[in-house]
Image (cartoon, rainbow over all chains, first blue to last red; front, side, top):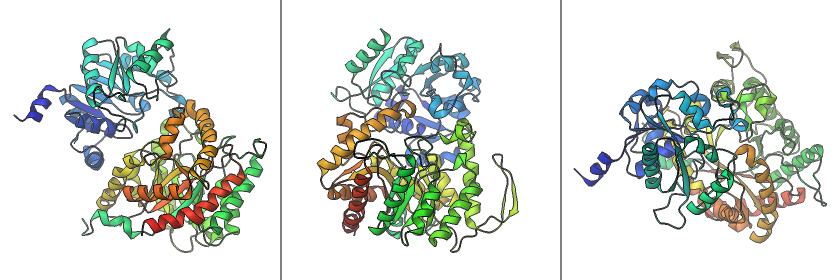
Length: 221
Length: 354
C-alpha cells in the first residue's frame, strides 16, 4: 500500500451534493487535503462530468444515491430551496455537513426556514431526523475557500466555526476543516450555528482564531 | 474532436475593450446626488465620449433601485446609437429571468437597426435581484426561468419563425418575431459570476462567455475558460470568445484614482453588504483588490493596462469590459476615466498583448 492509499484508508470518504458555485470548490480543496471525494448533482453524473473533470479533477461524478451510500460524510452544497425537495431518507444514518444559508434577500423566502426561533441548520437537522448534522463552511465565500487556505501554525491562518450536537461528528468535520487549511473553532451545540449565519459576527469575515473566538463571545454575551 | 488544440482558441478573436455602467447615481460639486433624469442624460454623454475615444463597446447593466436607476438601458443605448457610428452597444447584463425573451429580442433587434448592426446582449442574473419581486417572479424559480428563457432567446436570435414550448411563457408556433436583423444574429453573451452550470449553458446555446469578476483573485476563473472551451468542443460548436467584466477607475496617477474611488467604494459596498452578503471592505482589503492579484482595476493608465493585459492572458480572454463609476463619484470624474481608458489604457493593452 502506498502512503497515499494508506492516508485514504484512514480518512473518511466524502460525497459532495451539488455541482454549482460551491460544490466543485469544496471537492477540490478536500481532494487536495487527501480525501477521496465523489460529487453528485440532482441528475445523471454524465451531465456534470466535464465540470468535475475541469474544476475538481480527481473527484468522481456519481448518482447522488450511490455517492451517499459509499460516503462517511456528505456535504450539502445545494441552494437551500433545493433542500426542501430533497428526500431525507437519502441521508439516513449519515454525517451531513450543512454549508447552506437561509438568506431571503438573495434567495427569496422559504417557508420551512421562516421560524426564527431556530437556526437554518437546526431546521435542516429536524428534517434529516436520522442524520447527524454539523454546520460549517457556510460563512466563507466559495471564492475565498481556495485562496485563503494556510498551513497549520501559519499566523495568517483563518478560522472557521464547526457546530454540532454530536461531539464525534464535530471532531470528524473539524479535522476536515483543519486539513483543508483552516483553524476549526468548535461549538458543541448545533444551535450555536446561528452565530455563523448571515448577519452574524463572523459571516464573510476573515478572522484568525483568537479574533473569531472574541467575535462570537461578544455576540453570545 | 477537432484537430485544433483548445489553447489555440483565444488568439482567434480580435481584442476588444468595453465600458460598462450600472448607472450609479453621480454627485454634483457639493456632493449631492444628481436626479435620475440628469444621471441618465449624463450616461448618454458618457457613451458618446466612449465612442469618440475609440472604445469598442458600451454596456448598461439593468438595475431597478434608487442608487442605480437604469431600468430601461436599451432606451438609453438607442439615444447613444443615434449620436455614434462605431461603438457597439449592449446590456451588461439583461436580467433575462424576469423579462420576456421575445421583448428582449425585439428591443435589441430594434437597437441593432438604429445602430446599423452594433447591438449585443449580455444575459445574466446580475448580483441584484430587485427585478424579481418587481415583475412578480419567485427567486426560487431562478434556475428554471433562466434555463427556459435562454433556450428561447437562442432560438429568437437565429432569426426566422420560432417554435418553442415551455412552462414559463406562452408557447410560440412558427411565430415571426420582428424586427428582423439586417446582418444575421447579433452577439449574445452569458455573464457568469461563479456557476459552472452557467458556463456549460453558454456553450450549449452557442453564446459567448463573459466572466463577471468583482472580487478576489481573477485567476481562479481560469478553469472556467477551460471548461467553456471543452464544453464548446463537446457540443460540436466552433470556439467563441471569452470576456472579463470587472470594476475600476482610472485617473492620471495611482494615488488620485485610489483616493477618489476608495471612499465611494467603501460606502457602496457597506450599503449593499447586508443584502448581498459582501464583507465590508477595509483599506487593507481594498489595497489588495487594487493590487496585481485583486479584481479592481483602479489606478493610472499604466497600472490598469498592465493588470488588464496580465489577466486577459491568464484567463484566455480577448475582451475586457471595465465597469466604471461608483455611486457618489462626479460625472466629470467618470468622463476622465472614460477618456483615459480609451486614449491610454486600451492602446497600451494592445501594445502589451502584441
